[in-house]
Each structure stands twice: as structure tokens, then as C-alpha cells.
Length: 192
Image (cartoon, rainbow, N blue to C red; front, side, top):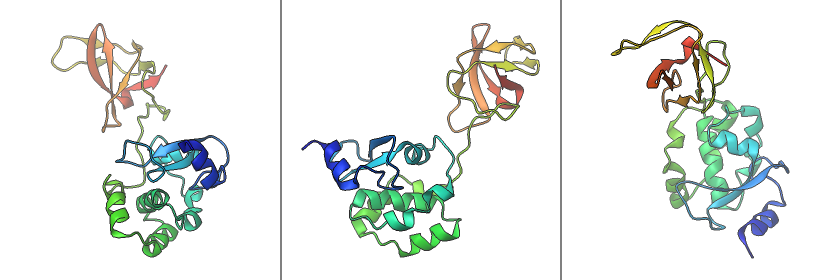
């Protein structure tokens, strides 16, 4: 039997973390890279986006972990532990974390990504108007900027196409102006 039918059967065709029944896909629990029934879970898009930090954590969505953390499948337990750890500032999550028991091997697996040490909030690249920016967006400068180390002056209203988000710094993007790649602070641009 292939993997997806096994997961559909074991999960009753619902997300193994929140019980939603739409937008389901197989998620390989890191740091594993090969899919086996032991290291994958069946997830909805909402859970996946928050686990992968593409969307902010919605604590209300995760309250169902108080039920699903008791799954018999170690991969589900590991992800539940990681998500509870990211929300440990919430009283209910901290309480559930205190009572969730993982054997030594599964606890080691859960800690391997370091996710439990990170805060639950995710910072996104936001323009001067508070609009979220994405890789490849087009932006417009809202201020004339002198480019350090260059005679280039990027004028107010300059359009910068196909931006690249600077990883680990939500206040910066990279873009080309007059053929030169420069770093621009997000507070000086708006989505175009």
C-alpha cells in the first residue's frame, strides 16, 4: 500500500493535528527527508503554513492539540510538542506541554530542529503601508535614497521589480536599480 492511502486510513481523511478535512497533504517531519509511515503526518494547509512559518501562529487554531497530542503516532506527537513549545507563553499550551510525555528518542527527535527554542511569532517583510511583501513583488520607493558606496541616487517613485526578500532580516529587501543590486529598507517602499 502506498503512503497516502495509509495516511488517509489512519487519519480518517482529516488533518492529524486539527481534524480539518480539506486541503490535505503529506508532511515529512524534519529533519527527516525520506518519507515513511513513521516520519510523516497528514496535514491541512492551515497547519502546514503555520508550521512552516509562512503565516502567523493562530493560537485558537491549535487548541485542538490538547486532543491530538495523544496520537499513537510518534510523528504527530513530535509536531504537537514542537507547536506547543512555540506557543508556551499561552497558559493552555504550557499546561499541555507539561503533561505531554515523549519517550527519550521522540523527545530528541522533537528537539533536533531547535523549533522549541524559538518564539511563536513570525516576522514578515512589510512595506511602509503595512502590506506584506513577497519574493518577486514590484515595489515603489516612497523616498529618494542615496546608495552607500555609489554615486547612484534612487529617486522617489522609482519602480523596483522582482524583489528578493533578505532572509533573517524582515526590514530589508534586495532589488535592482539602474542595473545595480542594492539593499533597501522596507520602510522606504510600498508595494506597487
